[in-house]
Image 1: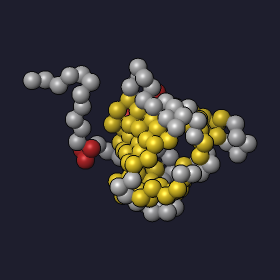
Image 2: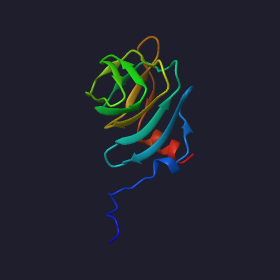
Image 3: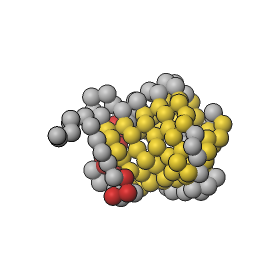
Length: 132
């Protein structure tokens, strides 16, 4: 019986890690143009960070290895975290190589030093990474 078009079965080991910023790589697993949600398996090198950003939709993540240090505390391997709409992150850092599964249910507004929006990471941007 064929899978419903909305069902997926992805061998993540068969996907190539694609660059997603300095010290960051990703494997885009799903992008939904209808809802704007996206899921990506992320790998961050030790000593790297995600710049300041604001969640324009909620998000959740699950840490497979390493640790994510963010406003909610330190999420280590085995931790699931939920981030609400409007969550503001001044800096998310990685003291060790970290692999985590991240699902966003809307865009992320990337913020400059003055707090103004300097870019947006959304489903369209994730689709561009997937198409690389």
